[in-house]
Every structure is written in structure tokens, then in C-alpha cells.
Length: 229
Image (cartoon, rainbow, N blue to C red):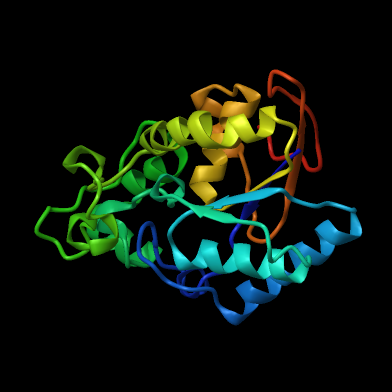
């Protein structure tokens, strides 16, 4: 069994700002969403053997709240930068209308809806560039994004899926992934083999567990909610 969970509302979700790799924490409402998700999973008799999340606080805090609320504090949480949110480049920190004034409405809509369209890239000297963050000191230069399309984000995530997550599922373990909207959209696309045109229709709300039952080939045989296009 696989459960995908988008982190609860963050401080910048609440403020309507593009967040990406900016490390903001949960809002009070987001912490409540995480606890509510845990209670929902408990009510359904769900349990977990392992948990994967990003290195960003809004996701790690959600994972911790969920497991503690479920009485699963002993379950190991493995963090990886590969599960970080899509990097929104020069949009990070801007509100939607501020970004529209700076870059135009059509480019922003294309960035949000099209699989291959990237936001404006950061200059490497920009303090928002992850190469300035010691958390990413071990990454190669080609692994440090200046901006990412949805395709770029999925390409970053899938090696981690294949190397770390899929083997746990193949062993029959119950896996929780706590991550971010665009990472989870990419995983849903991958699991359902959607084409790129349908990505804009994949909805992943904050704090709502998406439960997938997979066969021996890790193909979806059942899911708890219609998140597919």
C-alpha cells in the first residue's frame, strides 16, 4: 500500500506566495490538517512501515505530526532533497499578482499548467539559488536547479522512486510519502501513465491522504480518491 500526502498549509500557502524550495514551516491550520489526516488514516485502520519526505520543514513537520498522532513515532522518516517541491526559480517569494506584474499573466499560467514550461530562472548569484544553502552542499552543480518545469521535477524524483521507494513497496511494505503538490502530481502522472496534457487536471489538496493499492508490478489497482485526469 502507498499513501501520498501533501503537507498541510504552510505560512506561504496562506499568504499566496510561490514557495518552491524556500523553507517555510506549517501554519497553525496546516498542523491541524496534518493531525486530521492522521486521524482519518487511523479510522481506516492504516499503518505504515516506512516514511519518505523532503528536507523542507513543511513536509517534515507534517510527517512527524502524522506518525506521532497515529502512534507510529518509531517509524523511520527518510528525507531526500529529491522529494522537495518544484523549484519556482525567480517566482519564489512573489505573490501571484506581483508575479503577473513582473512577468505577465500568460507565462505564469503556462508555468502552472504545462508540463514542459519553466518559470523564470534564478541567477546563480541570487541568494535564493540553492547553491548558497549549506543543506545542499553535497549536491553536484548540475543537481542544483535555477528553475524547474513539471517535467524537470518528475525527472528529479523518479530515480529516488526507483532506488528507494519502489523496492519497499515490492517487499509488501506500507509506505507513506509526505511531499509537495508538484512532486505528488508527477508521481500520480507516473503511476497512472497519464500523458503530459492531462497533468493540469491532477489535483492534490493539502492534508488529504491519497491511498493507492498496487499489484506486484506496482501498477495501481485501486485508490481512495479520484486525483487522476
